[in-house]
Length: 123
View 1 (cartoon, one colour):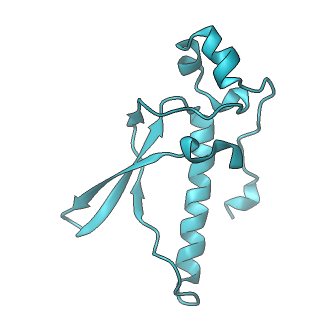
View 2: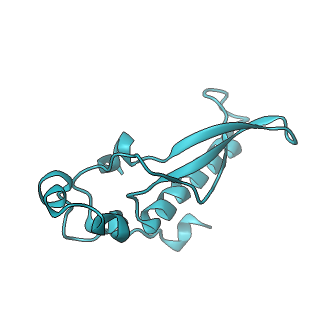
């Protein structure tokens, strides 16, 4: 996750929901990111939300998690982090890049990463 850095994170676009009277944040996936990596990261978001909500009565520090809503929107102009495992990048996006960019700038690792979580994470 450290290798993703700031460029590897989704963007949030905020809007006011008149029904709930809350600000909601729509998650926008970077176009370069593989869906498996995107789903892998969403689990961490849910775990953080659950941990923060379950401990809110004991620890009052920090802001409450923002209400984040998934979407099918894709952020087209996001910069891809370099040197990630090859399966972190969307194959269609990779195919649309110049070979010199892939080889000398992006430099993806040839080994793949297992973007799955053990079943006890969901328990």
